[in-house]
Length: 209
Image (tube, rainbow, N blue to C red):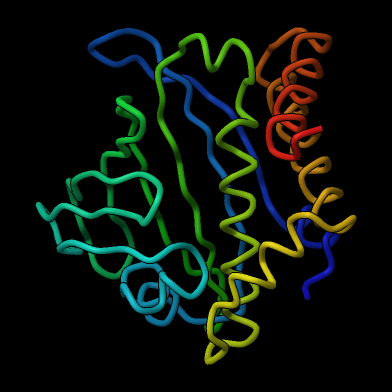
């Protein structure tokens, strides 16, 4: 298992804004650099069989204009694709629509950064939980990506994932992720007390505490 605190520290998290037709939106951006080349990382994040190993099983047509569905989670439409560096898609879940933008950035011959921006409207859910509600989930995704790249041929072990999530290490990961997203919220101008209250609510929601 990858060291929890090291994984949290290896990830960059920022929060910004964007004006959409329907009004102001928040842009949550998360990224991590991995020791693999651009073509391999593109394969990891676009091939259905490999996506299932580090994230969730996915069905549909993984091409520009195609529709996708993550098992038990979001679905949507792939709105653009620029192999092997970028794709955009809608992120449709629980009756709400947001958007993701994925970018792969070369940082050396065998090192590539995965960067994902999630654009979402400000609503009651955001007011209550802030960026951590989505950010902790993406932190978990990047942890899965790091684990997959450290052992690419290993099958996904759902029982082990469930056990880890409920463990002390898993709880620590959720707490640290929530706290880091609170820091990003504060850096973007939110009142510290509000940001920390949101982080506490996010942590409680993810852990059932």
